[in-house]
Image 1: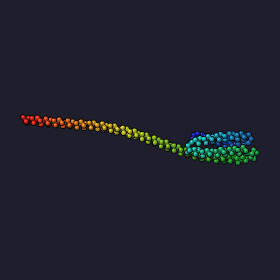
Image 2: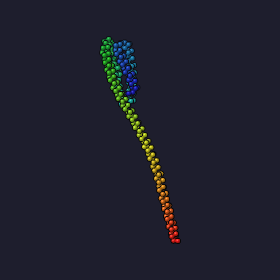
Image 3: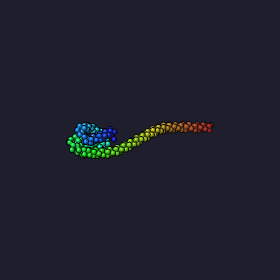
Image 4: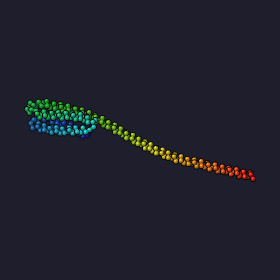
Length: 221
């Protein structure tokens, strides 16, 4: 619910109630007092028109879920204002003789009070419905914020897992490099061992040949 709209709404309700009282008072007055009271009511109606326009602009600037209920409420306020204007016109155009004043006093006051009571009842029902809608909107917003927090937490966990995977990947690359280096070292050692085997074999063969030659020469002499 818009705080700006609520502010305008409070001002309008107070002004509407005040104008209803002034209309009721004007019906029992006559002469200059009646004219002055009607002038005050007309000035108040201009202020009420201004508040209605402000509420209309504020309601149309809100999201659709809130705007629809506020516009429905605003239509009731407009109806209430039109009833007040009709009442002012009726009072202004009333016959100034005593019979007309008596009739207005008896019927006009009753009608005005009934209209005012009916409008106040509808306004109270509308206010209650809007308050319930506001509670539902606040609850939905709470759920949305909780969902958003959960999403942020999940994203943080995924980021941490990604960092862990990247670290593990880097570690595996390091292990692969170490294995490659170890493989090269073992290959070189294997080659050296093969070469040393050939050298030792050659030395042993040479020694065997030398021993044979020595034995041969000794035996021959």
